[in-house]
Image 1 (cartoon, one colour):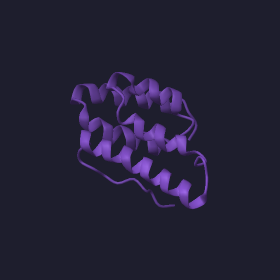
Image 2 (cartoon, helix red, strand yellow):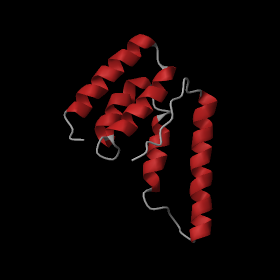
Image 3 (tube, one colour):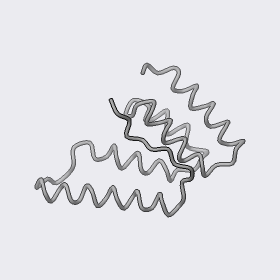
Length: 107
């Protein structure tokens, strides 16, 4: 099983905006090609991309609300990338809180 996550060094505001645009463009194109009104589970992609925009103070709550929608690897990848925008102390606190939440959840 291949992992589709990439290791990035920094998440910028411009990069997050481009991800949002990519998501919209991808879903719009698939809807046209497949003649669909909505993409099945497209809200999962939208929700994941939106998570890059949430304030660090709300990240743990997002994890609690969404831990059953995404794998632990996906959540940790999101945290690692979004965490590049956090200061080191805040990132450590958020990582510890996220670990605590995810350790209580089966894989």
